[in-house]
Image (tube, rainbow, N blue to C red):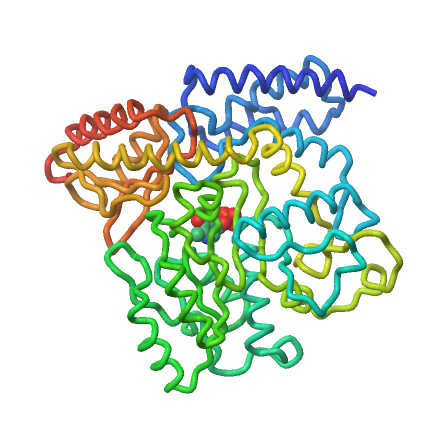
Length: 478
Ligand SMILES: *Cc1c(COP(=O)(O)O)cnc(C)c1O
């Protein structure tokens, strides 16, 4: 079997790739036409002939790697996708070789145990009661926490709203949504929330926007009037969604006051912490999530701030019973009475064949320790602060909000179109990779400072480059 030899070739190629990326020897991205990539990689010939192994495999991987976007490059400042620690990638390899589809215990006891353990780790960070590891203590009388790992925060948000609906409208599974079911959410909620509302068949008009301040954060003082108006119109709230933090500008909603408001009304609070819940690891930034334990459900991605390779997202609930009762289905070959020393996750998620995602996160934590991860988060958040101060001081540049996380938006004086054109130029050059967003109806350039190697100097060079590029546009196009 050629496994070890071929794997060694792949690892050697990846090792060179990582070193080149870290040293910034190659462009951070290079966007060739798709057809050229298919040609260059000789995809059609390769599958026709088969037998890709040894030197040909090395050659293929080398070429493939030239067509990747290099997240390990210090000028990667674009998206909320982790620069993964290699230990997590080894976890992915182990998962793929063993292929333990662990939705049922018998298909992956080790993977299940790690997922159960990691879920308990997340729960305890939130301040919720972890689930017992002695299965005989697992019962429907006690309200300990629960959760499941899945492929992305978007899916976790959808599932969280399904759990919330099960509480707000218990017969919806059987009879469909009752009329007048609505969701309370700020306009700056991630698009997956609106998409989930669509998938749930509620219609986009069912989203009741919450009043926000000029940073996009929910105004707790306005919750009561919005809620009362909704109720007076005969509507019923499925849940309230709060951001921790928001996607566009990385601002945290005041969870403590929102939590009190929801608890008083027995309203389901879902905290979308896909990006920012990881700040719970940092003693310095934990207060941004004050009283998160008052929520009913939380989405928390490990593949953003926890240096874990895509995908590894946690859906967490304060009371496991809510999650355990959401998907009311029978599939006699999977769901049946059985004697087993473990736990099935299958009733908690959309997925049937389910990957053991816990191992990737576990191996990252095992390599860096919680403190190592927390230190990096603090460093990235501090860098956003420094960059904010510096950029705001530059003639012609401004930031819409002071950052609370590692997400920072800014713009150069000029039109919205200019911002987009400047980003296109930057991407074509391949020296810097940044993203863009609209916020309060204005177009911004956006940094996600997620690469631990990015320094203030890189951002300073970027800003100088943007200033220079702007001069290349005729004044009427600025
Ligand atoms: C990134 C993000 C999501 C989506 O998570 P995916 O893992 O990309 O599906 C949802 N909500 C917020 C607030 C996010 O930042």
